[in-house]
Image (cartoon, rainbow over all chains, first blue to last red; front, side, top):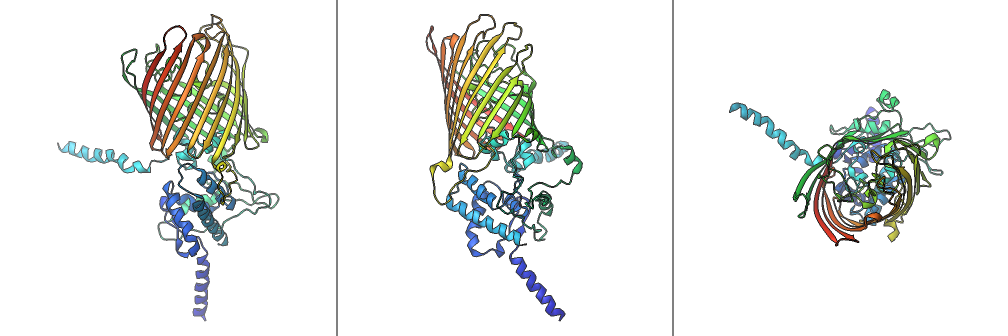
Length: 119
Length: 471
């Protein structure tokens, strides 16, 4: 009986873990653990991992998603904010991002926000 | 010999440190440290401001905050999960972010986006910045002029070392300080567009002084009005003198008439009320107190921005499925005026004068165009000769951001100070490179032609190399 309960707890905790936004590393090396991400989010992550990182580390994205606060401005980081930041980066000279890149990144960040709320 | 070897053992690693860490040097002075962000958040190439820098400046060095979730939307409050414990996470930083996360003490069930008290409560209660907001800024110039009057064709100069400070106390009072520890040369645009060492009385450390000390009471009495007092540059032109990447300043900001020291960008003891109205309109008005005279001087500014990031830093609505050229276009128009009366250092004669000006700033992707024009009238600019003088100064600059750290520009200036009988034309191409965000290197060429009504046309050419860094 104890073994059964233990196995049930393990199974339940494993299910919950799938929905978590896991974070690895610290400081400039802070990043998302992509292990549990659905396949359709991979393109968004790849774009973020290459184009966003050209100018800044992923630390500020991780902090924004996990805290709900944009670390530089102190403003709320919600789905309105992800679109706003997307537009900002689209308009930023030499950001090297087109509309498809921006849409992929916004979709990915919105997915992360949803996952963070589930926890 | 052994002693020297030991010394080298310590010195060599110390000398190599800047090489090792140079790639990590990304942030500069007080705002960068306070907000933990890079210079390019607010600057194209320091010190030229981008749209966000302009919004930050106009709002008294505060990122405009949303205090309440917009109506009809549910504020998201992510449940923060501690990182996986793999021995390499940074829970302290996440905890700090969580401390500043949402509070749910709203009156009407809408979550309030307001930071909770920070850990260091006495500092927070006192309104003190957690970091001492101080920085140093240095400017070095090299000028080459093959026809230099003093035969000094190649001139290296340490132009200035300044102490800068800026910040905000509890989002209510902001401050800005610039103290010149050392300056060299006198800027006299009637003679040259770069500071000269040869002007009498302008030797090394000519003017260690408080250049600006200003305090701003933000959103006074819960209105959109900011009240600014102290010594500062009255809000006239769209751009402060320092808002540039070139070595030389815009002639519209710095031209002088006769012996009058007045320029559009001269710091004055003043009080100013300014406000962002409706997110895109900016108005400012103030009075200036000049020593030794009872009558005050007055000025006003109005500007409006169409397209682009608004004056509170909010992005425009953009359809991500359909491209339109207006997505990248921002146009700002400004008009201003200054009415004053001044006198020379030792003169009791007064000069009544005014300046009226207009600016246009157009931004499209990496291209930026600035147009500026000023007309002025002085009734006694030499404090004695009562020589009424009209002045007309124009500047037009096109600049292009070639890469994130490289900007090319060309500027044309026209300056006609009535009584001199000389109309000056300048063409100034320049290229600016920022090897590190807090360091700017500019190479600038100046061609100047003076059309004199009496003597022959005169030309002058200079090559300038400017280095500026802050830390």
